[in-house]
Length: 342
Image (cartoon, rainbow, N blue to C red; front, side, top):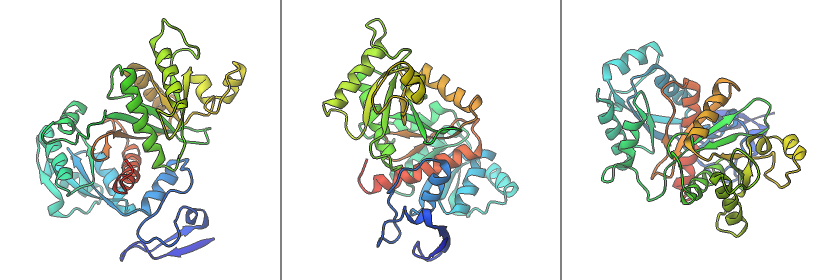
């Protein structure tokens, strides 16, 4: 069944199926609320297409995969873009991709670190809603984000979340933090969890299940991650961590496999059904991230959370599809932030 939808602005006329209509909130124009949990990147993209477009400032945009994602996002009506980088190279790549770019949307800045600063400034000035990392080192990009005078600090701990769509799973899996916080303290893990829970809410996961991971699923005084995982679970039970169900410690198998959890007699709503995997440190997170990509061939998208605006942070080696997914996640996050739900 198809329904013609004409209420998304003067230039959009699209046909959507009946299932998509369930996402739309009756009586609201130019807006859409998540009313059911998004379980795939196809749904992420479809949902982003029916939200008001955001403007993304791309730092060091002179890269083929970055501009391929830009072209795809523009074609879908997900976002508009301001591009900062080597203008000649951007024009060359855009021509190869048949990407139409307006002259005023490109700022020539061949130095990657300076391109990062200018992209961040565009967000601070209100010219853009989202900042995105292009072909630039993560350290240079984050330096611009974290600049005390000209960055996007919000007073919160910044954390990285990677969303995975893994074959055989009936839900998206979110891993945090595989990129920013090296060895987070319990206090930092609380804020990382809060960042990720709020992100999950933007995907319609109103009470995500968070598994605090360790090497084993029992509390061991000689293994600090198990102690911190147990503390997080207790904080959740007592209302100090809200908006989610948090439990731990879990080993990876009994966090994502109901069969493994049952075999080890681990009960509870999170056991085997985790939506969020809170890793103990960056080493575990980075290895898990890359194993999901290269062994499981998972689809991915990645953001930095806790800043004053959504931040798209993917690896320079990531495909244009991963960058497109990240842009779409940022669109959903930006929509929630505009409504004051940070």
